[in-house]
Image (cartoon, rainbow, N blue to C red; front, side):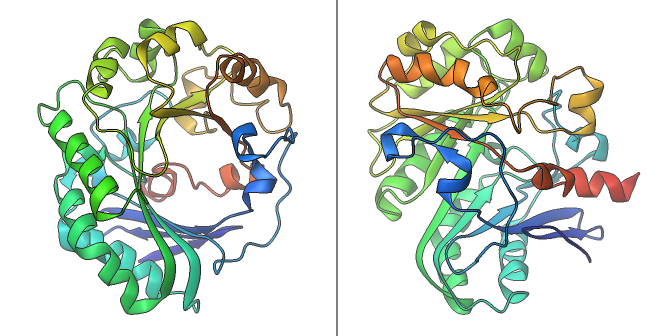
Length: 319
């Protein structure tokens, strides 16, 4: 096991089991989030790094697959190869390793993001682990006021079990966790051609995602999320988005595409997003005007240099 210390936490690289997972703290929503509907109105022109406090918010980002079969053009994971799903016991191993290796014994919020390597909807063990194992496992090590699991999906078109997985996750979110869980759809663009390029023609079309979204139950607690990882070239048509998705059930989250080796090689403009809010404002303002709840999340430069985006540490070791 190799442990890579970062500015905000640690990355665990287990080459024997072909796993990678990380623990990070949070800068505080007032420092890297703009969300008018939450009362956070300040535009963020760069995020200054500072020490983080795991007793306030503790984030574990774990892998659901060993590598990833999705081949997104902005992600380095495909270079690692693909070695199948992470077993239920291995999901527990990732979380348990993170919990064991800190001195923290209580936190206001413990988030578990199924978003490091892999597409979680290919792995049904994510559902069983979240419903039956996660909260008990956390309670063995810490007192957490809130345990908040999040599934982020690229909505693979070839996954015949996609809708079943998503509906089951919504049941877990709404009933088992009483709304205290997240579901995020990776959208990135309202232009299907641009999406096909980014997701290597492996994601559903926007019309198909919209049809799936209409089958979801009304969210308990927080709404579902439409995530847009953007650059200056991103196409985000507010009118089109509003026709396809219900703003009473979804919020929009805007983030930058991270500066991975693949993103740079494939020509994504990933050089201006950290200090120039204009990149975000041109997407945010029309959405807010149309009545959407919008979160703009701005990372620090340290978070990219620390390789806390998907697959990067394993790639560095492998290379």
